[in-house]
Amino acid sequence: MVVAILALLGFLVSLYMLAYALGLVGQVICGVGNCEAVQNSPYSRIGPLPVATLGVAGYLALMVVSFLGLQPGFQGSRAVPFALLGGGALGVVFSAYLTYLEAFVIHAWCQWCVSSAVIMVLAFVASLPELRRIGDSK
Amino acid sequence: MSDGQAGGNLKGFYMVFGAVALIGLGALGFNVASKAMGTAAMEPVDLEEVREDLRLLRDLAVPVVKGDPDAPVTIIVFGDYLCNHCAAFSLRERPRLEAEYVESGKARLVFYDFVLDTRPETGTFLAARAARCAGDQGRFWEFHDRLYRSQITWGMDSDKLGTFQEYGEALGLDSREFNGCLKSDRYAQEVSANWELAQALGLGGTPAVLVGAEGGMSRNLPDYYFETIQQAVDEVLGGSGTN
Image (cartoon, rainbow over all chains, first blue to last red; front, side, top):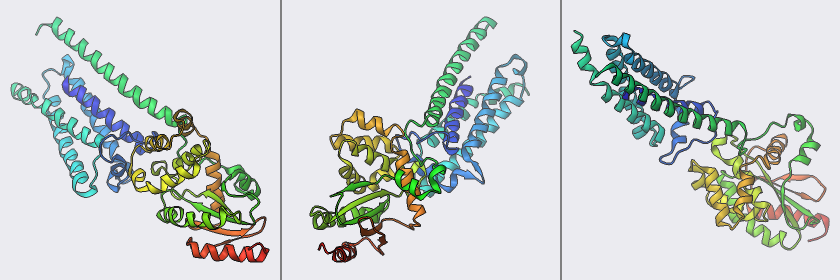
């Protein structure tokens, strides 16, 4: 349940960043750091795709998987904990890479990107008890 | 955990999840709708209808004028609020021009906005509108100079609207009136037309300074320094016999 809530928060943050990247919102709300410098840097896109798209897709996937884990039919499944831990680990690695870019390449911080990274780490930590579920279902 | 407890927990979870989703999506929707409704015009409006008609465009491209309207010489300046040479012109050269020619009635100064980077995030279009909003309360030039003095500060700021509101307060403007103007599309058409006019005239950069006799053709000067403008103004004044 905690992972689902965290995934929802991450999804909303990424959706906001995506809306900004697509020009759907005006100025980005940024109390701390320089979000526009980060969002307008060349690292904010992978080809034509805003990086936030990956965040939206990733958090959405995490949300769906964590919802599936709550359904009685998936209680004994090993696929759900594997997906949560695998997805979480991937998300943490990718967030670490983005945070590295902010700190050492762009030299600017975006509060929303940092929030997303923190949410991803928390979601991964909250998924760790799922390891036990994998062990139990052996 | 009994089935009843699990069901109760799930119900609570769904309620929290739904509330967070509703609040988050609502806030995002509001943000998108605000932009769509154009609460604060941040970029040029499309003036396709007048673009091809220079006379119409000139009428729409209302400049800000300082000095005697009947002065024999007109000094026209096209400026952008994030251009540092424009800041140098406005803060260093313009006071000398005003003291020498505008206050004596020999020339009038005509300022047009030439927003070089029209992306909303640069804030230059909003800055141009803000200065004109300050002009509604007779403080255009003070706000104009404030923008140039602080261009690095607001240029780097992410909340440009808030920063301009602070500048307005610092100048003693009526906040309600100024903020109302700022958060509307007032002057969006004028500033857009200024920009279109600059492009129609083929001006390549800012500040662009043109000098000419009242009602006559104006000459685009090679630079914005006082001495260059002085020479051009004196030539026109000499020609019109009013020096």
